[in-house]
Length: 364
Ligand SMILES: [Fe+2]
Ligand SMILES: [Fe+2]
Ligand SMILES: [Mg+2]
Image (cartoon, rainbow, N blue to C red):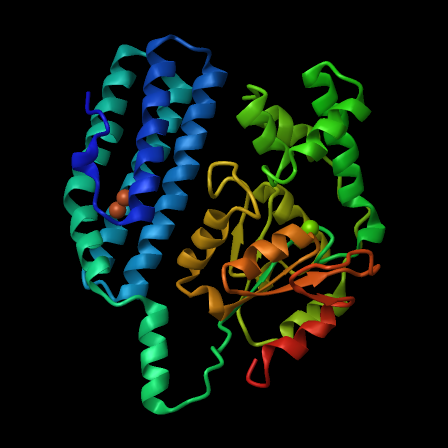
């Protein structure tokens, strides 16, 4: 079996970091198979691997597009084929379970493939990407040449979902918090108040409760957590919002969602509001292996998939630390604070979503 070692390092920091995670996810899967873990537990490792693979491929493809990598179409095709392979394996696992034969296939089709792909295609890609001037620098250079204004044109709007696309008065997120409090208390064997006190103390270090529980409390049952946070019918009271639809449709810039909730929840909310088709991408809590905003890599990943620099996006969120996270990277961020309860946030404040037009310029 191949082990991760420095000979697999391409020298591109972000690519290498994700590759390390990818191999770790693969070893986890193999280990759970070899140790005869339950189907449920194996499924979880497969699911994690599948999600991470998708996120990683998106990131690499973004790098390739951004740098004008000539072999991009072929690399992307190879990625797609591998995603198919993993999906096939998942189906096979559901049929036959962790047989010897299945484990051998995982080693050959996932382990060997990863190893060979990294050493071949990814090395070539990383060498090319590193040889290209960074996009921001390139853009700055061409601006100088043209003598144009130094304001970077916005290319994307990135919205938080909950309490941003709809008003907090609907109480949906409050209910999520209430359920998570109960869930966390039960898991830790504490009173809800005590559990939430601990959560509050860890808030600076971990953007989401899930990250905190996983990193410090030995929590692993992600499915149970997500099911508790987002039960069926959670958005039943959320009305369709045709005004929002009209407003967003009137802005030409493409739009994406960046949420710390799972994609199923985002799909449900966008569907309820009637705005699903207005967003090109949904970046959810799985995109970086359950690490959420305000971690830099969460923003980095979304930007890279969108193929834009941080200056080319406007990010809108109702949580001050999330908006600040983006602003700290050099991006334009707005704090949506409809009840005017936050003070001293480093991001500009808006009280109504419609105010974003002031920040996106006349061409948007
Ligand atoms: Fe890769
Ligand atoms: Fe690749
Ligand atoms: Mg929010």
